[in-house]
Length: 510
Ligand SMILES: C[C@@H](CNC(N)=O)C(=O)O
Ligand SMILES: [Zn+2]
Ligand SMILES: [Zn+2]
Ligand SMILES: [Zn+2]
Image (tube, rainbow, N blue to C red; front, side):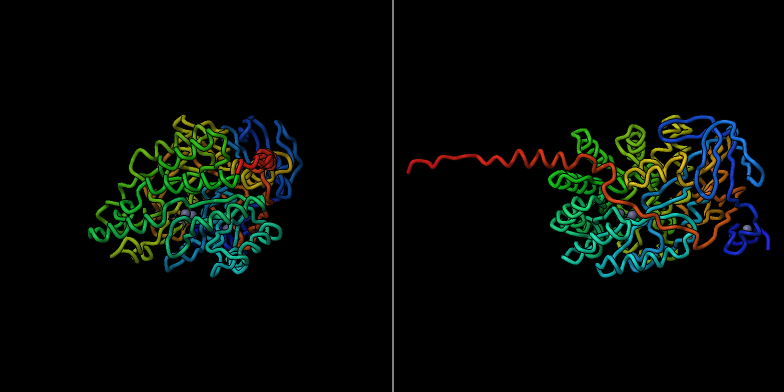
C-alpha cells in the first residue's frame, strides 16, 4: 500500500506509515531561520532519534539522513495548545473530535502538543483520569492533562495529591460557570486554591459568574429570545470581568498563582492587567476565537451558521478582539490557546429551540498557528520570537516542561514546524482535518503556511499529507512547582512573620 491521497483526508492511518517511507529517524533541516522565544538565527538543525542534537550553521552529516531545505523559511518549536477538549462529554453529547482527529488536525496546523482537560467521573478524579487515558490510546502526538475539579470533599483533596505526585498533573481547573453541571462555589474555589498552593499546582479558572449567567439566560427566554444571539446577550462581558476579578482577589488572599483560561473580553483582560501591574502572578490565556472573531455571526439568519459560534464566555462584540490582540502583543496576556471543543451541525441543532441547549464550543486546534501568524506577525504587530513565545514556549514554561518542550535547543524534543512566510493558507471545512462539518473560520485566507511538521523527530506532515500512527502519542508528565511558584515561600514567610508579633496589650484599668 502506498501513501495514496485516497486515504480519508490524506491520512496515513496505521500500517501505511512504513510504505510512506517519508518519516525517518535522522533529519537535517538546512538553511532556515531558527526561531526560539529568546532569539532567531540562521542555522541548521540536526535531529536524531526524536531529539534535537545540534543547532548551528553548516552542519555536515553522513548518508541515510533526510534533508529538508528550509532556506527562506522559519524553523520553530511546534505549537503547544494549552486548552483543548477532545472526546469530552458535555451538554448531553460528546465533542466530535477525539484524540485521533483532533490531534491529526493539530499536526496539520503546526501544533505538536496539547494539554487537554480531564473531567472527573461523578466528581472522582481517578475515574476521570482512567477514562481520559483510555481516550488517549489512539493519540498520534504528545499530550498532557489538566484536571477539572467539579466538586469538593476530603476524597477530592486526597486525589489531587495523587494526581500531582503520581500522575504528572500540575494544574487544576475550577469552573465558576455552568451552574448545575461543572460550576463550583466560592467556598470550594477557596479550598481548591489553597490545595493547589500546597501542591505547587497551577489553579485555572473559567471566570464567569454562573449565577448571574443563569439569571441572564432566564431573562432572554422570558423575552422570547431563544436563538444563538440570546447566548451572547445572556452573559455579557461584565459577568466575565466580575468573576475574573473575584478569582484574582481570592488567589491574592491565598497567595497562589492564577491562570485565567479563555480570556474573551476587555473587562477580564483589564482585571488581569491591574493584578499583574501590582505584582500578582496571574496568567491570562486568550484563545484564537476571541482574538480573531466578533459576535456578529450569532445574529446570522441561518441557525447552523450562527450556532457554530456559540462558546463560553461568548465571542464578544467587535473591538474586544483588537484589544485582546494588543494585550497579547505587549505581554499583558501571555499565551494563546484554542479551547477546541467541536460539535457538528447536528449536535449544535440540539439547541435550535433554546440557545441554552446549544453545546458550547468552537474549533481552533488546526487554525491557531496560521491565524496568529497572519493576524499578528504578518501584520507587524508581533515579532517572530514573540510568536514562538505565545504559541509554544510560555505554555511549556508555565506547565514546567521547558526546555524539553517549547524550544529548539540541544536535548529538546524534536517537535518542530517549518513555516513559509511567502506561502498562504485557506481555511475550509471541506479540507480541514476536524471531523466537524463546520469551521468558524470558514473561507479565511492569509499569509504564512506550515509546510512541514516534525513530531517526536518524525516528519508527520509534509506536502499537505499526514503520516500519523494511532498510539504513537505520548503522555507528557508535568511536574509541580514550575517557575510561577519560584520565591512564593519567601513571600509567605515575610507575610506570616509580619503577623507573628502579637500586639502586647496592657489590661485596661478596671
Ligand atoms: C466547556 C469548555 C469548552 N466550551 C466552551 N468554552 O464554550 C469550556 O468552558 O472551556
Ligand atoms: Zn500514507
Ligand atoms: Zn471554559
Ligand atoms: Zn475549555
